[in-house]
Amino acid sequence: MKVCVIGLGYVGLPVASIIASHGFEVVGYDKNKKIIEALKLGHTIISEKGLDMVVRASVETGRLKAIEKLELADIYIIAVPTPKLNDNSPDLSYVSEAAAEIAEVINGGELVILESTVPVGTTEKILNIIKNNRPDLFKKNNNKVINIVHCPERILPGNTLHELVYNDRIIGGLDEEATKLANDFYKTFVKGNIYLTDAKVAELSKLTENAYRDVNIAFANELSILCEELHINIKDVIKFANKHPRVNILNPGSGVGGHCIPVDPWFIINNNEHLTKLLQTSREVNLNKTIWVSKKIQETASKIEEKIKNRKVKIALLGLSYKPNIDDLRESPSVDIAKILSQKRKYEIFVVEPNIHSLPKELENKQKLYEFNDALDKSDIAVILVSHKQFNSPSKWQEFEGIVLDFSE
Image 1 (cartoon, rainbow, N blue to C red):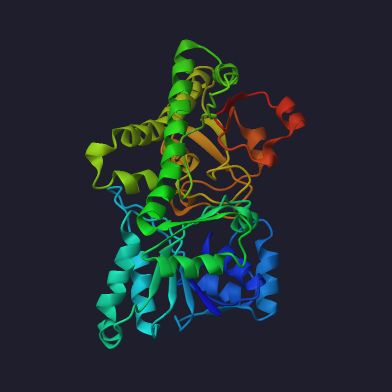
Image 2 (cartoon, rainbow, N blue to C red):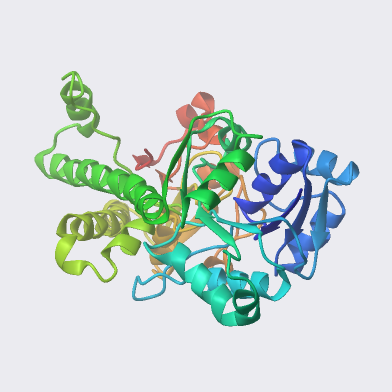
């Protein structure tokens, strides 16, 4: 069977390469020309453990090809972004565009799998888009024209290839036949358990997973602020509270980042504001934690300002990605903190992120990237925002004479 993966980002490209490595003919489609050109050469512009090797092997065997225009296939996997807009409502334009393009090339009988995380009801919207764009198919055939399911991705950046194979999956179709077809397909490469349900349950289940984590992180972040005001060590509080057999408090951080946890709760909140007070409060707590961290850094800088003259306070910001040892900056609170401090002319900022080669657009005009050792040598304050392995240098920290602020998880 021929599989077409639409969207070759952090989810789509690993999915395409894993499927190709299991013997399928796979074509990858993306609007980003850099991604397509790299894939044609067997390369990837995504930093993910082991991905470059699997992509290269799949391209060399001819199992994985890049295409610049959507074409006919047996199975379509939609793995496009579903970001939130400025008002926190979901941006489903990429999903809608993918569905419309699929409608242009299908003959009928194909399987469409939506892996992107979406609000409840989106899978059914895909069917309506295809119907509206191809009424001819539905007029000619009294039987069902297309099979559509939602199988949300469940991956952790940094361990994506392993989790695509070994994690449990949920498949929710618009009907039983579509669900069965998708189940048969995923069983060819997924070694975890596969659970079958309907589309709406699958949609809300994925959103619930990340909303649950957001709520629990908010509790830890709020507790950390309380402990700071009470001059109590938050790590000790969590350590001893977690000695209870039914308590498992997470570690606080500088906020919440990534493509899922800070975004997915809004997909539940949207159009359900009166029923989601806890989710809204959790989002507020986690967003405010980022602001609180930036204020604590500035308070520390103010104390140094009183002691120095004729120069700016020098601050090393260590880590921009949303979690350790990856290059993913999406929704990262560290980026927001760097933006806030960069706007203060009284500071000299040294941004360190060993997993990227260039700064995001919102910082590139105000900052440049520094090496860890260089930044530490220059700084009065070292702020650990992300606990990258490159920062675990006991000898270097022993040499550092400034103030260390650790807001990493």
